[in-house]
Length: 280
Length: 274
Image (cartoon, rainbow over all chains, first blue to last red; front, side, top):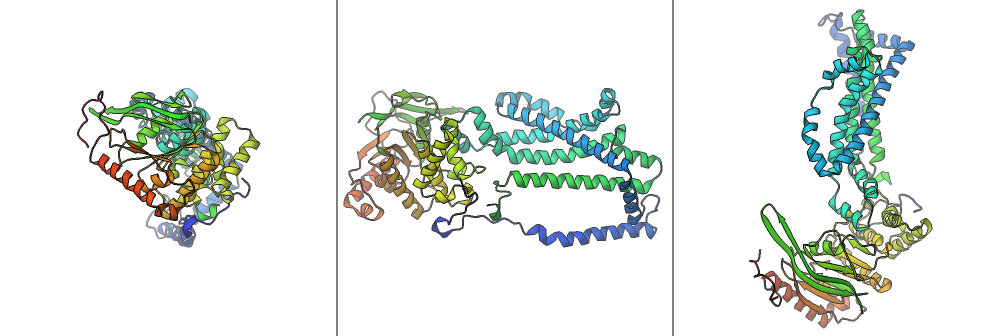
C-alpha cells in the first residue's frame, strides 16, 4: 500500500513492464510545423497570384491580422465564451443522460432489446432538422443551441456506453460475483471501469459533434456565440473576419479534441491502449 | 472428519438452439474439511461447469451442492475461487493491494484489519513489494499469485481452483504448486483443485477424483498415500508417485475412450461419446 508504483523483478527474468510506442509524436512534430507553414505559404500565394480572387479568399496574412484585431475586442471573447458555454453545458447534459440511461438500459437486456428499434430510428435524425423546433421552443437564446447540442451528442455517447456495458469480461464479472460484490459494487468496481474506454470514446466523438452543432445553431438561428459572429461578418462583407472566425472555431475544435485525449490518458492509464513503462 | 463440501446427484444440462447437451450427469462426492482434493479428467469433460455449480455461479439442472450443510444457491461467503485466466480475473484498473482488498471491503472488514489481511496475504505469496503495482506490470506467475493472495485474504473455508496453473510456464507452475501445498498446510483450508494435468493432480492432492468424459461422473476416487512433505524432485521420482500417476493416467484414458464408471441402474442409456 505504500510505495505506489513499485516495480518488482519478474520471475524467470522476463521484463514485466510493457513498452508502448510513445516516441512517435515527438518525432513527427517538426515535420508537422513545416507542413502548417507550407499550407500558410500556399494560402498566401494563391490570392496574391490571382488564382482565386482576393474577394473570396483573402491572403493568410490578412486573415491573421483580422483575427488579431478581433482578439483585441471584448466582443470576440464574449462570443467565444458563449460558444464554449453552450458546448460544455450541452455536452455535460448529454453525457450525464447518456451514462445514466446507458447503464440502466444496458444492464437490462430485455429493455435494451425493447428500445433498440426506437434508438435506431431516432439516432440518424440529423440534429439540424430540429432547428425549427428549437426556435419554436427557445427563440434565439442559448436554449435552442443546447437542444441541438444535447440531441447530437447524446446518441454518440449513449451508443458507446451500451457497447461498453456489454463488453464486461465474463471472468471479471464471475470473479466479482464469487466474492459476493453487490450489484452496485459490481457497477462501480467492474462495469464502470470496463466501460470507461468506450465512455471516453463516446465523449470524444460527442465533444466534436457538440461543437459542430453549437456553431451551426448560432450560425443559423442567431443564438449568441462565434457562429452568429460569422454570420454577421459575412452579411457585412468582412470576408477576412469570416475566415478569422472560422480559424478560431477550428482552434476550439483542436483544443476540445486535445483535452479529451488528455483525459483519456489520465483516466485510462491502466488500459492496454495507454499504459506505458513510465506509468509506474 | 466431517464433510465440508457435499455434491449430491449434480446434473447440468444445457439446452438451446434445439440441442440438448448433458455436461454433468449425476455427480456425487464429498470433500472432508481440510482436505486437498484434485479433480482430473479429459479435456472438455465438464470440469468448469462442475466448478461453477459448486461455486454457486451456475444453477445445476438437478442435484445439490452443500457447503458446511448449507445448500449453495449463490456464491457462499466462505468460499473463494481462483480462475485460470488470472489476467481477466484481476482488475487491471486497481493496484495489486486494492485487488486483494476489494472483496474484504465488500465484506465489511474494518480498515485496519483489512490492511493487515492484505499485507499478510501478499507476504504469504511472496509479493510484499508489489502492493502498489498494477497487475499488468507483473509476470503471469506473479499475477496468479495476486489472485491467490486475494483468495486467501478472504479467509475462505473452501478454496476452489479452476486449472489455475494451465497458462503459466513449467518452472513457474512448479513454484506455484509448492506455494499452494504450503498455504494449504499452514492455513488448514479445504481445497478443491481442478486440473487436466495428471502429474499435478497426484503431486498436489491427498486424493484424486478422476472424472469421466461428458456427461461427467466420478470414474475413480483414489487416495494419494504419498508423504505429506513433498518436493518437486524426490516426490516426482518416488516409485509410488509413478504408480499413482500410471493408474490415474489409465483411468483418464479409459474415460476418453468413453468407458463409463459402474453403471447406474436408474440412468438412461449412455449417449454416444462426442
